[in-house]
Image (cartoon, rainbow, N blue to C red; front, side, top):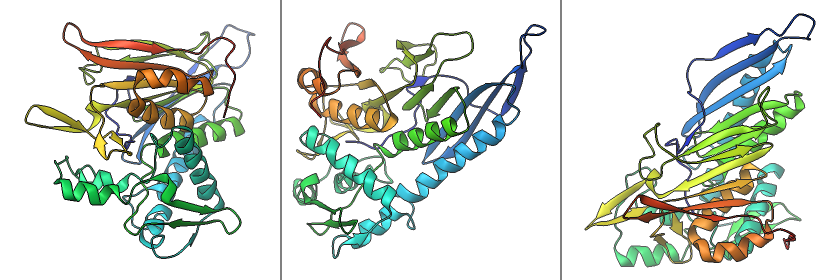
Length: 350
């Protein structure tokens, strides 16, 4: 489990000043197709949006509403904002049940479902580990074993109690804390896509910091949104890419060990934790997932990173429409890609 960082492992479009462009069609061919591109900083990263619509002069307003929605999710779920609902839960839920808003309660129930299905590979109670490893407001550190053991005692989705009847959240161990950073951006993307559909936008690309990208519909005149995944060894080099995927009403989510890591005595420790062992996952560069939603993709890229490719093949039988791509280190090229693709005729066992 890891917080999603915005180091742009996905190359989609250049984020800059908002632009609105109208493309004139042939005479008598109908309204011109308007195109709007803009960006907004929120949730510790840069959100970018591209909108298309025939005869739509309201695209800048739609984008503004979309970015407002991202800010709202940040105020609800950020562990960095003291006044967020999640920060309030973290302060109080170790002592008493905390009543939470329906939206957040439903979100946490969905997170627990991902935790159960992945047998704890995905876990939103990972915050104590992020702190002890120095990845919360810091560049990372190698913790003493005693600190690590103590932190691990306060981690585990089975210690998170949700009461649907009372709509309360309670921690069963004092010292527990939620960290939704690995999935909140995917949820925010889903909320933006839902809002765009309410505004009858049929063609859009929503990019959350390069780690979660949703392609709504298709670009004008194209069959899909073509999104390049950057080279996991050189993620900051825009000229290098490892894979191109096609999105149509789908989301691409990526977890990468290069997003936040430190090196001690030749060993690289990344922010992607195995919540069950309390230690960073070793031996992988990144995992890319194509899924039906941002929340699903963000949960799965974390879980699959922790599981590794062999266990992923069995686990993804639950998700027959999901595609997963592992990037593992290799001396010759620097990396090798392993694909885990849908199995024909597989059914869901969720």
